[in-house]
Structure formats: C-alpha cells, structure tokens
Image 1 (cartoon, rainbow, N blue to C red):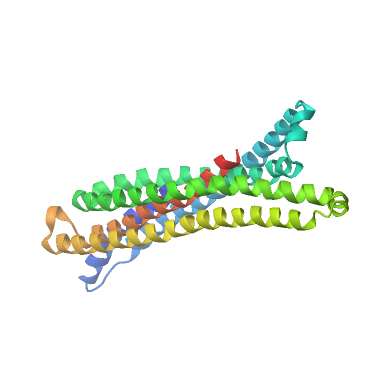
Image 2 (image 1 turned 90 degrees about the vertical axis):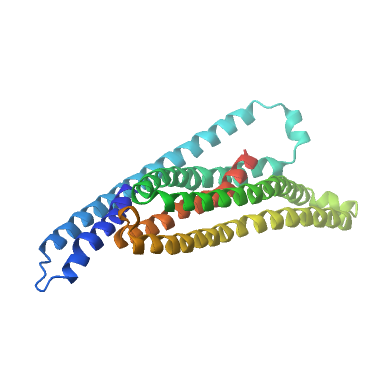
Length: 286
C-alpha cells in the first residue's frame, strides 16, 4: 500500500519537476529522471515482496484457525446429549461443518485481510489528498459520504436475506439427508408425493432468500463504482479550474496525482462494501 502511495506521489514530481522542465530545454538531461524512476521501482519491488509474505502468512493463519474450530466443534458435539441428535436433522448438523465453516473461511481468508488492507489504504491516501488539495479533498469526502449512506441501506437489506439463506440451506440439507436415509420407510408408507412436495416447498424458500440476498449483494458494488466515477469527474473538473488559475500553488502534476488518489480512495470503499456481504454470511453461519 505504502509503495503504491509513494509511486502516486512521485507522479506529481515527475510532471512538475522533470517532464515540464525537460520540454522547455533544448538539450534535456534524462539522468536525474532515470535515477528517480529506479528509486520508485525499488519501492514497488519491496511492495511485491511484502505482499507475497503477507499472503503466505494469512494462508497459515486461516487454515490453522479453521482446523482448531472444527476440532472444537467435534469435541463439543461429543458432549451433547442424545436428545440433541434426535431433535435436529443430521443434514442440518453436517451443514454446520460444511456450509457454515466455508462462509467463515471466506471471511477469515478474504474479508478480514482485505478490510485491513483497505483501512491502511484509506488512511494513507487521505493524508496525501489533504497535502495536495484541501478543497478537492472536501469534495471527495462529500461523495464518499453519499456512498456510505447507499452502502448502509443496501447492506442492511441483503444482510437479513443472507440470514434466511443460511437457515433455509440447512433445512434443505436436513430434508435431503432424512429422505435418503429413510427411503425404504417412505416407499412402504407411500409417502413419496408428500416428501416431494415438502422438498419443493423448502427448495422454493431457499431460492427466494438466496435470490433476494444475491440481488442486493451484486448491485452494491456497481452502484458504488458509478458513484466513484462521478466523484472522479467532479474532482477533474474542479481541479482543472484550480490548476488553470494556479490556486494555492495547485499544479498540473498535483491534479494528476490527486485524481489517482481519488480512484485509490474510492476503490477500497467499494471493496469493503463488497466484503460486508461475506462478513454477514459468515456471521449468519456462526
């Protein structure tokens, strides 16, 4: 993250201190520019290495956590009375070990690391935006506020449906497991049609809850992305005016760097909003 920020800040220096002066020189010297580019390339190289180490660490943390969680669940299950297994469908219990654990895996391996990375990005980019231009930063924050309001509204709707989806999925798994194990009993008592109707009812409930949950989840990121594009356009227009007027020493290089930061600031907001649904699913599974 810090390497990317450093590279973006270099864009201002690249334009104002190197490109613009070089265009005004009859015999330009590209030596200082090449040295600066190599320096920034070193920052990006460090960023690649640290990203690889970070991802390797998260793989070990994720798999170790899930292993311990499954062990604790199994040990807890061994202490439960027989009444628990008589009153809960076997498929429902197995769904806890498979579907619910899988949603937790997604949260631990993807959502939480990405949220941490986005948080660091937001803080570092915000500081750089303030340094470059306070008026454009205020304009960006207004658009971010609108984005957060939209995210809260849509995430609240999808969250309730994700809870229903996990519950309905457990019911369907339990129904299938019971009917498969009791297939002979079903045939003896001619209960095939009733079992089919019961399954169709549960399956339809699962379809409705999953359809509603994923509908709201899938429209969240495109809406936020478009709001981010609108913010970019507004900042480009306002920044162009400030650069032409030379307001508070605002230059073309600062404008280019700020617009890049504007995109970098909106992107983690969109990523966090997308991960909210995975976190809600994990909490529903828990």
